[in-house]
Length: 354
Length: 272
Image 1 (cartoon, rainbow over the protein chains, first blue to last red):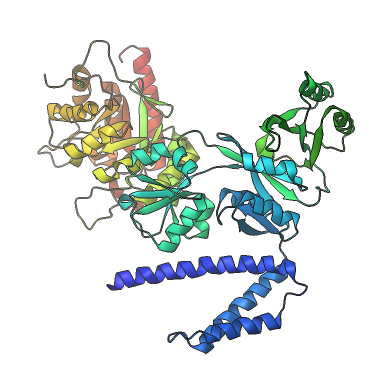
Image 2: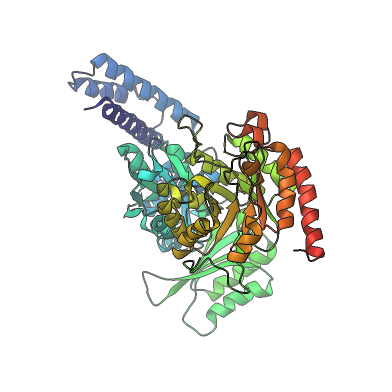
């Protein structure tokens, strides 16, 4: 092995160590939701004992003990900070995390595999808040999330419209002229098709945009790049070769902030979901209430009910607070005109989305 | 010049190119900026200065063809990022040189106009590549080239399906040593007789003398050129290349204050 190659492998391992540590710290924060006190001497003792039983000739027992002790101390410090745990779907660096950071600047951002993990985690109290995408300006509704919204007990307490700014990312020592393969989520690859074609780059589908960035960083891949957010570049120490590589006008995704409690401070926007019976004019009857009360609707979408495919749920966002009298009156009248009705809550509208 | 299928003049036809809102070929367009991108601070300062003075587009090299391999070669990709930022701040479209066919598609992602320098005028592989880039091309005249050779090079770009070629006269080598090159101003009317493509003048490299830049710019305007490309540096004494021929922002402002009224006057009196 040449020195250069050895160094490149060392760099790769150092990156991996940090990415793995980040994951460990996230898990430690989650574990604190299950215990009374941060300090657990028994558990610490057993961790250290287990580590020492590993017989690695280059890792002295005293060194591994010291290393682990440092990690445990740092993890306890993090737990003491008591930051709200904000869940999002995807790998660290996903657009969901971009939204989470905007909505809750002081949070600890916890990646989840699936949208349902975000909902269940917040519902059962193991996570404090959740951030989920409801609609994208190009692709339309995120059906999985909308469906989960119909059944959840959670309240919407905020929204953020996040511009999807795709960046081409590579490790620092990659020569852009040597890049051949580009990894990303198929949707991101599709949105950047023109850029890839112009530069003769081969698209490689990957499960997630941020996941692709993470993989490039961990594997220290040369001749390869990822399409992901600028945040991913920061998190995985990748170089942004080019920002805004999407073909069309930039698209944006609207995210909702979910909590077990309604937003105590109220807001100027409200979201509801309802279903009407299969009779002529029943939907019109509902919408008429809003028109007559002069309430501006900002979104109306329908989705078939999974449980009864012949029936639809309607998603309605409108301006104003549920505590406004005219809105309270409309919501009360709606109860009689619908077969099911759910108020997701009032929250401050994202100024950028108006 | 019978072999020019696309470049040769057709009655009534003049190529007019829209570059992100700036029109080349129907008025006087001024491209200004430093020889090369040296740092973000230097580039942004120069960009704001030329914008203030009324320039329409920004120049700056990220990849430099230098006579010596040991001279400053340019900032490369970082230079392109700085140019992108300068455009974001000033709104001026970016003109930058390409010297390597492998870089063309990448530079086209950042720049609005790809410049082919005098030393690369007959680099046919490069010409074909910029012909495919989809970006307008600023084709400088080779310092030893005839008009026919120059137009054949434009033909290379046009034949790849890129109709947007801007010709740039930047001086040719003669026996005269006082000036860096000899500005061939007759190229302006001659080119207009031979082709429908727009032609601009580079008074900086053609004279290589600060004192001659303004008079030759005015002469070029009077000859009917479609634009000027001028080197301007916020602090010429600190420039990493061509320090002794870059105008200060004040000198450039003076040039603009004379060239623009002269152009309007010649238009209003139907000389142009």
